[in-house]
Amino acid sequence: MKKILIALTIACGTAFAASAQKDIPAGQRYEAVQLDDNDDVFSVFKYKDADGTFGYYMSVGHTTSRVDIEVGSILDGSFKKTPETCICLGSNADEALETLNGLIELLEEEVGTVKELPCRNTNGVGLLDYSTVSCAIVKPFLSGKRFRIAFKCYDHVYESDLTKGNLKSLRNGLKLNQKLQPDK
Image (cartoon, rainbow, N blue to C red; front, side, top):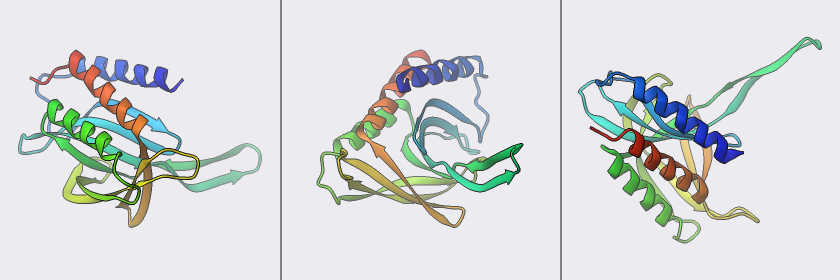
């Protein structure tokens, strides 16, 4: 089911990107691939800054329920938001693929290894200042190694777990997107 959703996301994103203008407007994200894994949300996208420079980024987010609403039996629900940080992958798709491959290889390191990665904070609309984000290699009980990425957003600290399978899915989705929509 997860693979079908990934394929549909890639197909829809590619169709949207193919219909987009040749000149990408500054401040707009063009998603290459998106992956939802429980409450963690990951995507790889291209972004153009106001000065005209391009970059590829991996969005790392964590969906949280902020307010629960209960009004009798007619209406109940919650407001959800996904705070995120965006890890810098490179200025083109080849650099982004190389960075993703490096992250996959980094998971071979010892549990407890901490790596600082360059990132950009976001306000939900556009990318803001450059910063760093801490990624620690952890191995939960009865589970495989993964990156635990801790980031601050909206004055709170959030954590997302990025597995080797997630990284490979993002890498493969970016490869497919690059074949369909190569950088010009």
